[in-house]
View (cartoon, rainbow, N blue to C red):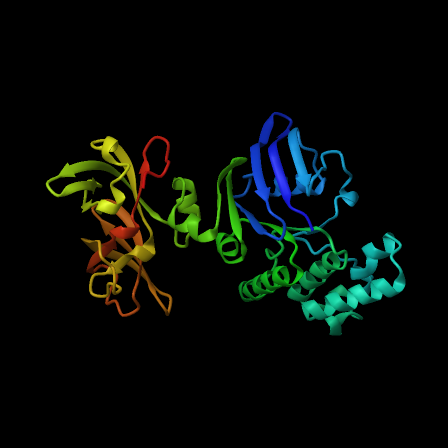
Length: 367
């Protein structure tokens, strides 16, 4: 077993700077998710760790060993790609055993490992089939099994669920999490899907344009994002943002968006004194916007805003209401009992205990 460390890693493709001073320390047995939009450098970081790309500067450690110049086959890692990359003419058994055969592992050991992996993944009854006779989810499990039999120190997964339908993605997501708990091995998982990241990762590294934005536990990223990018990327639907100005009133500070103004709770004021009369961004998540008739018990700091409902999406357990206040459009996740209808007025209650304020220039979180 082994921890991983990216130590001031840079990667250039020609003049394009893809990874910029990347520093990540991944303890042994952690499940780390690299997440971000396409082109942010997350897959490149994984490929550099695997040895499929050479880094330009810096060092990569696997355990206590610098692996900059170590061949991929000697890094004790196993990688699962978005493409299953199975040999179509081989059975499931032979696909899973192929890497071990190349390493001249004894036949009895190969048989033991393949059958154990098959049982672990629920594909023991499929070992004699060819890939063409399998569903997409079964093929993905075979690809996972091929990695498991190698008993590597580190598992690397590059968007392995992208080819699966929605229901199967949820199921396989849970299976991979269970697999991590059973194997107690370091997992590094790349995805652009923030739901996958939030549900699977021990910690999440959010990347943008080759720069690490924030590295922390899922709930910390959600409740205390370091900047607007992280705040907008984590959470679905995304956080609502408003251009605003901080004002001092008779009862303290308030955020003035131009069409509505909301007071700032005292618990949020600590770092805002020097931003009075300066432009900021006000942020609030859809789940902190409620129908005023159905505010959850225990919600203390509430401000009311009257809005025009434009679109209503009934999700069953909740309702997404897209509303307009003046020229400001935003979305709320409302109680399913709401009477919100398109082209009707609705009084909303904003939970200010979970509000966010960001510097307009730097987009850094202020509260």
